[in-house]
Structure formats: C-alpha cells, structure tokens
Length: 353
Image 1: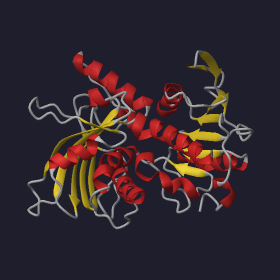
Image 2 (image 1 turned 45 degrees about the vertical axis):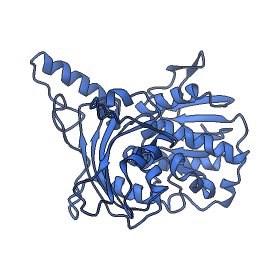
Image 3 (image 1 turned 90 degrees about the horizontal axis):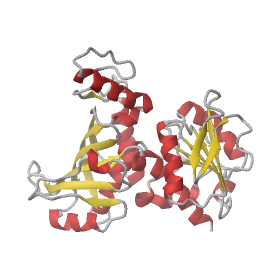
Image 4 (image 1 turned 180 degrees about the vertical axis):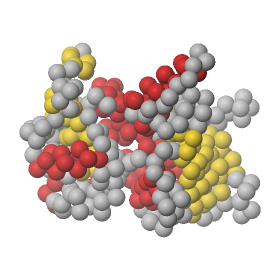
C-alpha cells in the first residue's frame, strides 16, 4: 500500500481560495493545467509552479503575471491546499506522501496510485462520489479510460454495459512534448524527402501508425497501455468483471485520441435514443451528421473540453441487437489529463464547502 489509510484526509477543509501547486509544471500536461486553471477562473489565492532544478527560474504567464518556476523539494508543499501532480509515477510516489503530510490534497495524473484500493480513480461526470472517502490522493485516470468513460456514461445510466470492444488511435501528446516534436520533425523531413531516425518512439511516425509502444505482456499478448485501459474502465465503472477488449495504436496526430467502441448492453437501445442521451450528457458533444458524412475528428476535438461522439449505430455484428457502435474523439491533454484533474479539484472544493 503506497498511500496509508488516513480518515482525516477526506475531512480536510479546502478553503474557498486555496493555494494550488502544480508538480511538473513544464511538461505537456503541466502547461495545460496552468491554462485550464486560468480558463476556468479557478478560485485560487496563489499558484506555485514546481519542476526540476533545470527548469527553476523560468517563468510562465498566468492571469497577466509571470510566475517563477520553483525547484521541487521536500519543502515545496508548506501551505499548499491542493497539489496537482503531473510529473511521472516515480516522483508521485516520492512526493505525494510528503504533500499529504504537509496538509495538501493531491490530484495525481500518473499511474502511481490508480489501482490502490484506498485511492479513488475519478472522472467527475461518471463517478464523482467515489472521491468522498479519499485518503489524501485522488487519481486521474489514463487518458483513454477518461475519454471513453465520459462517452459511455450516458448509456450506462440507462442500460447495464455487458461488454466493451475498443480500438484506439492515440495522439503524440500521450507520450509528451518530445513525441509531439518528433512528429513535427519527422513530418517535415518526409516532406523534404529526407531520412529521419526516430529517437523518442521506436518506429517512424510521419505518415505511419503502429501498435502502442508499451511493453507486451508475455502471458496475455496485450501491451501495458491496453491493460491499463481495461483495469481502469472496470474500476471507474465499478464493474470488476466487465469483459473489455482493446487494441491501442499510435497515430500521427498531435493531441486528440480517437477510439472506435462497440458496447454491448443488457437490452437493446436505439441509435436515436442514444443520440438523445449523448446530447443531454455533461462533457459530451454529438457530432453525427450522416448526410454530410461528418463525424468526430481530432482537428475538431483538439482544444475542446467536450468529448465528441458520433457514428452512432446498431452493431450489425451482434445478432442480438443489443450492441451499439460509436466513434469517440477527445483531447488527450484536456479531458484525457489536465481538464479532468482540474475538474476533480473543483469537485473536492464543492464537497468541502
């Protein structure tokens, strides 16, 4: 157990204007965390930006001011009420307990605590109530799990989900700034007719796609990303035995993940009713124009808070008629990471008032 049971943590009163810290402020997600706090007018009293020693002293603009990035140390959390972590599982395991001991509630974007029994794994539109019994940490899910569960939640509210089959088309942002830069550089080189040797990802990225580069598990043949998606969707939905199959693919797109999802329900649900459910669901936008053949695309989802859902149709591969096929696209850096973390922080504040 990485996080000790701490009944007092859930009872901590977060002030109306908390002190917020971002750990990993110079990373791809950290930068978007700053943007989200500003765009949503998060009611903080001050913001501390924490990163490695090599980034200390740099500045980031926030609400018309330049904030100086500080080096992350064990003393960084004095007076902090909410700490948003986005610096990798190793640093989270080291510094999250320190932040909690200093009095902060941690929202962690890494994989460090997602499967800990006493750490809630939360998508606010889906299972906000799970954070009631936190012990100082609320975990932010894998980007695919977050985007997929937002899209599926309206169906789950009306029918029981019996099985999921998914294929994902994952953007460069999921591997960080370096992968996004490599995609740009590789594409420019390809357009010039030049050879390009990949250094961040294992295969050529320009005009190519390939199986997600997480390690393959010898006993299942699934890679680590696929196993995360399966385990985390089950946990968010509180369906530990839910059958989920997934194939994760990296595609040459900057920052929005796509996924083809077939969902088997316990009873048939018409595409028309499904569209109505999606249209009235928080965090979802229906993009389903069959006449124009216009459906969710990364170029539309990038920079958008909502998850786009379309291609809504009965799955002809299921003779029972109980399955729907969907295509879903969401911004990996927003709902897949930073936005979800900020929404968790907002929910924590609402529950503390």
